[in-house]
Structure formats: structure tokens, C-alpha cells
Image (cartoon, rainbow, N blue to C red; front, top):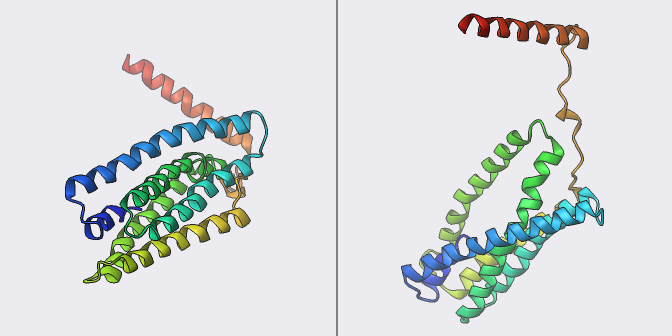
Length: 211
């Protein structure tokens, strides 16, 4: 979907102002949908209508599965710009469900290392952001046609579809065993508690001296 403005520019002949509006408006819709879907997910959890894992799987399927369908629709919109706009905006908007899916599941998997997991995820998605324009450039270089752009969007739809199916089979929201740090060998919990207490006392004495 990030390449959609270029599609409207080269295929439908829209100017930079129109494509700029198309670049921003879908993300406003995405923010609104994210807020609404998060409330819906919280309701599912609060009323126990779905398990934690299934709530995350549903959110992920809305994001990736729905995105795949709308991207596929965009690829076959042909010379109908209004239809293409609808598919593009819908595909970007439902990505807001990621707030209750992929982004939230990091805390489920490891409350202690959620930030590290998010960092790794950001590394992968940033890499995809570099690769995507490269692939589009290879496929559409001197061939800015509907057929070539259809191929671009079909590849994107396939990528989203595979992600949706994979997460339904292997996705989880259970806390992982490596979330808890193991105590160092030779140090009992009582010893660690004593060391922490001693450190706090030293800190308090330092504060009194400073005063």
C-alpha cells in the first residue's frame, strides 16, 4: 500500500497534490479504526468471549488477511480510480487492527523483553521498507502499465496472505519461558534480597549526607 501513490501518479496521471492527499488520508482512517478495534478487542477479553490467543489471532487476520483481499482488489481495479481509492483506503485503514494484534502480542509473549521484541520487529519491517521500492522499480522500470502494477500488488497480497495463514497455525500469545531471568548459580534468593536491601540502605545514607 505504501507504493499506491506512485501507482496513481504513473497509471492514473494524478498530480503530486492529489497523491499527497491519498498518502495521508488513509492513515487518518487507520488511526480511527485502530482506536475502535482496540475497544472491541478489550470488550472480547473483558467478557471472555474469546481467549487471549484467539483475540490476537483475529486481530492479525483482520490486518493481514483483510489487507491481502483489499490489495488484491486494488490490483484488479484497472482503469477505475474511484474503486482503486476505496480498496487502497480500506486496506490501509484495517491495518489499524495491528494495535490489538502484532503490537500487543509482544507484551503477551514477554512482558520483560517486549521492547526488545518490538525492536527486532522494527528492524525487519524497516528492511522491507527498503526492499519494497526496489522490487517496484525493477518491475515497473519503463513499464508503467496496469499489468505491471497488478503484478506488484499481487505480490504484496500474496505476502500478506501467507503471513495471515502462518499466524493462524503457529501464532501464540503465551508467555515464553525465556521471559523470566534465571538466578545466577551460587546465589540464593535470600542472598539477593540481602544485597538489594544493603544497596538501598547505602543509597539512603548517601541521600542524607547530601541533604
